[in-house]
Length: 198
Image (cartoon, rainbow, N blue to C red; front, side, top):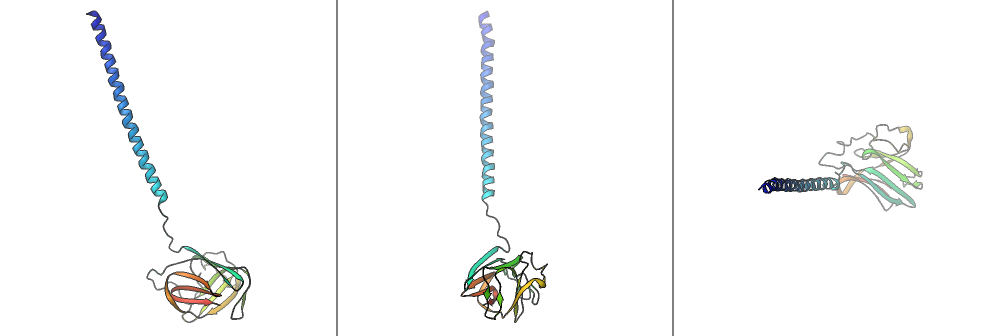
């Protein structure tokens, strides 16, 4: 009987230890499972955020390249949209120097001199391209200070050449301002208007 009394506490302690470790193992499994679930959710959320497309700028940067005779031309500009607004003599005032786009001033680069039908010559180089819109006449301005924001620091003394042009109705509606170089003609197209250099 004494032996059984000694054995009973040992059995009880052994049983308690089994219950204790069994409980702890069960809890560890739950903690690991929960940690795995949280990690998966965090990684999924991060991946979704990383893959989300960047919002389109209001006036995305565009490049137009082409040629006039042998001259290779590149025009870099920010392209604003109509968005139901009044553009001419509204968003873009008449008779004021305009950056010809949005954000930084539009740049115009040619690798060779350009000989225009007007008889004027635009020397090879890189320029800020400003315009002065008007109801019946526009002025294209090629300015030597090509790196500038908008037309806020426009300096007329840096003008290399000014060219007069007559605006005309565009054959199609352009929601976004667009430069085209086709058949030795450079054109600015926006809303229902087209202005050309040739």
